[in-house]
Length: 285
Image (cartoon, rainbow, N blue to C red; front, side, top):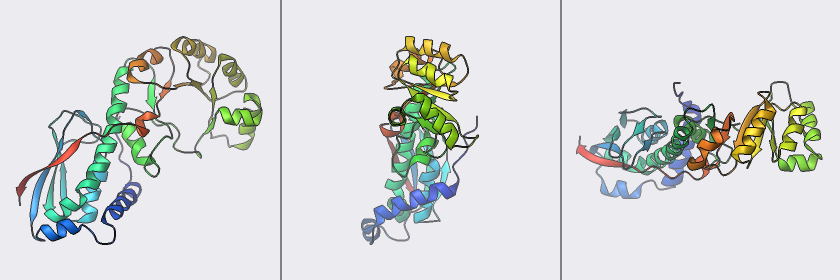
């Protein structure tokens, strides 16, 4: 499936805010003082380690918002698996603009490529099963759209984007409502017919109660592979099954083999290490 880019309308404000944070009230005082205004350069964007690329749109916008005459030529698209030392893009233009935008561009590109890379690692671990990897709402405030895009670039899927697009009844909702049955009944009465209802369950008894009330999806929290297999049998295809809870590449395969539809992993977005990408100066132009 082709990876659809995010609309510029979504990406540009995030990049613009990052540049404003970096430039402050005085701009790039170092580059202005040291680099002649007429100087131009051509640089290579190079990976320092293997991974999967995501965030090229944000990186390119960082350069162009600083100086619209900067041109970036991509050698690979987002979603590409790369090796260490690979050139992923060439950037050419006024040297001041390149230096001013460099860190912001690489911050976005490294962070999003890191998310795509760890997502790809888990996706590879469960290849051959019916399960898909999905992310959660555990995202960096303000960067959710970009981080969820990076998950897709790595071969994963997105869970709900926010509180507004689906019902997810969790343990505290259940406790306050007085039980799973009452929580689901209130949810059905309070939302439209287009809104899916998912329920988090910790036990098979809770799962049976949720299925009796017609949940559209069930989040099977911190269950063992054996419990997950039994849960999948109980559901019998009547709802989407989602496994969650401290899932790592080493454990993902056994969890996927249980027959669940989805495996949700929060650390994809909140703890993925940055992919090391740098700019190597090639020539003056």
